[in-house]
Image 1: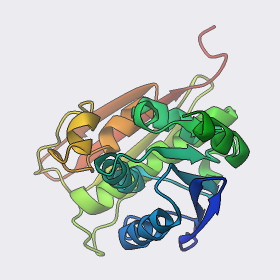
Image 2: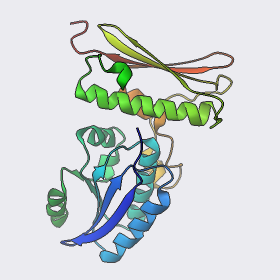
Image 3: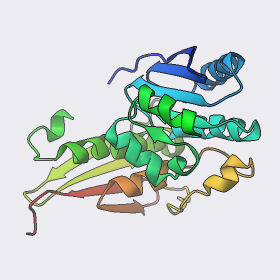
Image 4: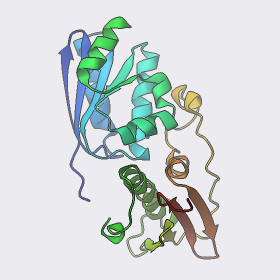
Length: 118
Length: 120
């Protein structure tokens, strides 16, 4: 299985800073993720959405990177949301209790609607 | 995945198998073999009508393997623990049975999946 390099782009959607992730998160992609977070944070002070819709494979090292982002968001009192996860990875987020700290939505529109209610 | 192409896994089991074997192999390469290119990690697949078993062997038999404890996410988020350390916990939650064994040279992790309908 050949991995695809991770790409992260940011944008604003109705007050939610979105980070679109595509490719495979690799344990060595911490700088990419942290840079994307910093860029997304410039869009607004509100919630931030990690859109995993373009991500093919997530392993435990990748989850550690996500935990790092979540810790940063909590320090900054910013809600971190997630969408676009397959059923398998939604289950993993629940097993690892990430879902206790980061609400997961099926897609971006649901996440933006949910974030508006927060 | 070609090795298990004929094994009647459900879609959910296939996803879990990919994650469990991927994590175990990554552990074998990183922790067991210390990223030494001349030390391969070995995979063996055994299948019956009732179960699928995958064994991953590395050369870390002299190392102490910690139990698959539940990671403390609160401590990780508070910066009191490394954000890493999810591998064994994740593997254990992906399979029906996980066994870890060592001899003087090797470390072996054995992952078992019960096939749907087996034992009914």
